[in-house]
Image (cartoon, helix red, strand yellow):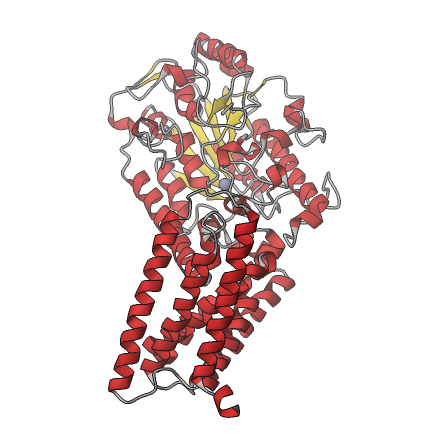
Length: 606
Ligand SMILES: [Zn+2]
């Protein structure tokens, strides 16, 4: 009796019996549950049937081959029990699923155990390398999800690739370092256990058969889940491995593809163009400021109850657009939508909405404007993703980086303006960290909203501090604009501000942009897509040419419109009456009858 209990046959019978009971329970509960049949599971049913049939066939062949070679068909029972216990340990400690769906645990255990056996039989101890990375990622993912509500998806990876060293350090708290270390240590312990268990299963063929046996049981159990309830996440770790790889590939491909598309755009200045308002020597300064992460509804100038934009609110020459939709939740794509003739994000399928030409700044450079770019401390420096803005500002003769926070670039601008010959028409292109996470750039000596904190551990439980920090950054930008415009006193100037994308501080039930993917919401269906956008001008500009006065009047009359980043390219051309074949009057807010934005946005009736 005891020898039977220790035998392989006992293990096989017992595990088959447990699975049979689980299948019976599944079928019974779904039968009494009267579940709606959605037909969604058709594809996965076919896949599961193929998996069951495939495993069964190869298993029979494997057992037959073992018999021919006079070896045991399966590893000994100690190895089988050991690997099963390891499967239980890993499924419980490394997968998020049992925390929400306990009923998925048996399937997870079978798949995990099967995957251990199959990979070890094929790669031996080399498979530990794979499992070590996988376990570390999964443990870190559970901790990350608990804190930030976001899983590792392509947006998180792309965001990480985009993040400056400063932003990364914002997340380097002691608790995060402890999590990273414990996930590494935890994964080392699991791998050490695996190596110990697998030492008993030296023969590859029995181990391969065992892997197929576990996968066969998993396939049968998976089939017992009604298609309407079946989800890819139930097939951890197989699906998880697929989705992590897919997220990495998508993030890298996305980056490469975005950069490639911008590189391939021809300059609009290659086509003949003419400037009808300026002849050179007027000393006009055009400021093009692409802001960072400013939601329209967090500016008091747009009705936010906190006075985050006190200067703008009282600025007599402000032309404010409270309803401006940004093209994408991604900085680079927004920069493309602002500076080129792109009308949506560059992955929009309709070719007419994609960019056809390069940066509008090139056209101004072709007509005698000298262009100076002012970036943040770190952005547009060396990261590959920052290449997009560097490409779009290629025509800038000088690129400056703020030595400290964005305010420190104001003296640099003053120095540039002083060095220019009198009457030089100039563009100051500004793109700094603004209100990007970790919401660090504000006046720390005199923060208007307190207590403010930029730690991102469970932001929902630090809602007040995080919101205060964010509002402080908006207040800081308001003061930044005041400082820059005060440098321009006495000159004819136009200041354009538009933020790249919004941010989520619990809005739409989302905390942080990276959690957007996890929320399952489409960016353009959330309030995060409305961004700050305004123009300010000097009276001297209006006096310079009647066209400018006319343009300002037209702009002012269209502030109630729903606009988008697609309007900027054409509005800048229209404002200066810069004629080029790329100009579209329907998207020029200074023309008499511009068309409002018709793309997706939250107010849309579906
Ligand atoms: Zn951004």
